Image 1 (tube, helix red, strand yellow):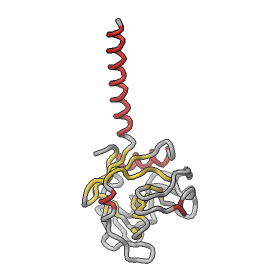
Image 2 (cartoon, rainbow, N blue to C red):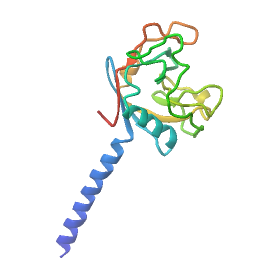
Image 3 (cartoon, rainbow, N blue to C red):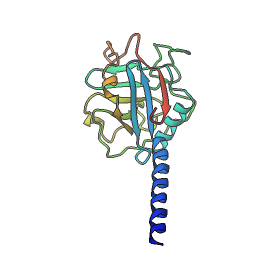
Image 4 (cartoon, rainbow, N blue to C red):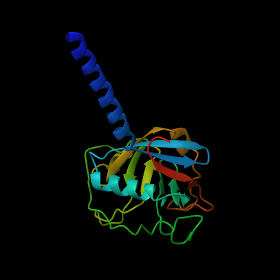
Length: 189
């Protein structure tokens, strides 16, 4: 009898582990760059509304071919303008970085998670409740952003490919002939 109970407990534990693995895969985002894949572990416990919106846009293919329109050496690479940044459909280099998506802006979900190398945060205007689709990946620590911008995730693999994103030449990091997110999918792909 004890052997049957032990076997049943083991099977339940294995089944639970498989379910947890399947659920946790949904909390990752894979961005295919020209040099290789970047995997981001999303933080739905920290910023549930922002993470849900990013996942929704990625699942619809909205982030595919979107430019890294603002890239500042030693700071960050910004992307995600699905309105004006799609380099295959309606790219407008003069307006890239000013648009969002057809989804509503989101209220800030500030947290105590620090901005470090690899942290992914939501871009916004001066209004803290204006984040929509744009996000940035930190090249280095940026403590001055802590508590001021919503953290949505952290790069867990492929940071070496983020480091290869073409830097901007302008004073605000504007990039001519920018790199792009080739394909963005939910999960570790």
